[in-house]
Image (cartoon, rainbow, N blue to C red):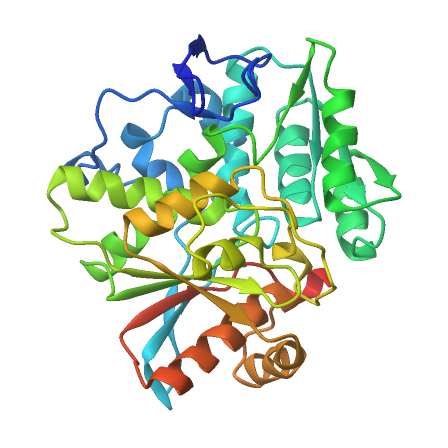
Length: 365
């Protein structure tokens, strides 16, 4: 496997030591083709590794690491909204969709001979990486910003990882983790920098296609650092090149009011995403003031004809309560996605068949 820099185009062998190009550019995986073949699904494997032939992982490693992540159910939200479906991504081993990317990334870390991991996270990604690191017998330090949910910190520590609380922003936390990974024997297991993570999150689309026999008219996704969106984007490119779809479904990404750098760039028709001030939001999982892959995300949204909308701050906790009354107990970030989408449908009257992921359990907050 090789990585290619998005800025200068240089290629390097993918390894535990490579997470960013010397020029400062982010890496993508070099692929000779992008394809997904339903005929190669492993029918007897009941985890996301049923798609092993479309994921760059080693069978002998993942089979001992996997906890059965993936294969989450798709259900209607309610009788009152027959066009809106939810995918229960919180029904994962660590209660969030981040397990998809973490299990693939840690599988690769083991293949590369890593012994210790560091990672920065606002919570869910840190929990997932800590859990799979523990199963793989790896030391693990997780850097989190001050104010991170105590429940998430406790969950990270329960998996045997060390939590380092950074007295600063999400961006300060990332910087601290990067500084801690300068030792070549320490693997920076970043869900932002390392494109292997998206090889796991793209299975979200594989499952929808297999479960429904098609893709819905619309996909609605929360957007912070883009770990789920970029996986979806990769899968849609594969589907298009494989001839499984003729056109892309409409992808609507949701940012939080008060911290929406990609929304600001999108509506201003900019080609570059600029850092914004985080004015505060309950949807901490998508409150990323300076997304490192922001320009890539913005370009990908436009390439597939997507839209960016805002979740109103004053509707998030009310929506969380509404979803709980429907039986779905979610984190504020997931509630924000619904709040933004409900406002969008109300203002446009455009109510296509859509799927929204329940990204994280409310038990975490």
